[in-house]
Image 1 (cartoon, helix red, strand yellow):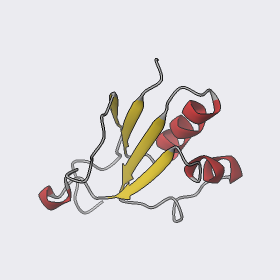
Image 2: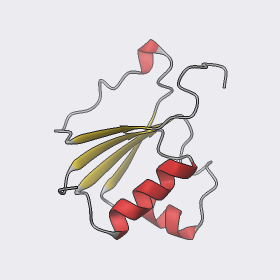
Image 3: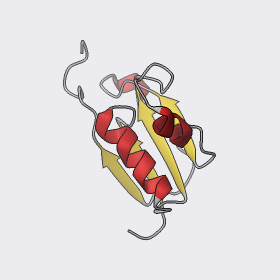
Image 4: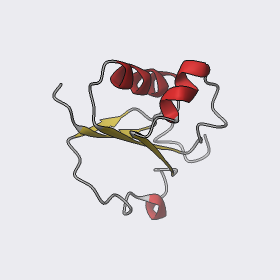
Length: 94
């Protein structure tokens, strides 16, 4: 993958946090915007994951993407890649 600006939907779950960690460790991306309804502070993360989410290349945005009012209108940068891995995209009560 060329270095890029990534939008990661559902990024604080098990798969998402490991993707963020890997991309940063391997210097695969210039920046990552993580969008999830669970903030990193409330997700179970080991020290390596916490360090990854505190990296200046990572920006977290809180949103439950099931609800129409929570769409991504705040994105103001060029996105090279979108990765969509939320666990409960179809169930607003989950």
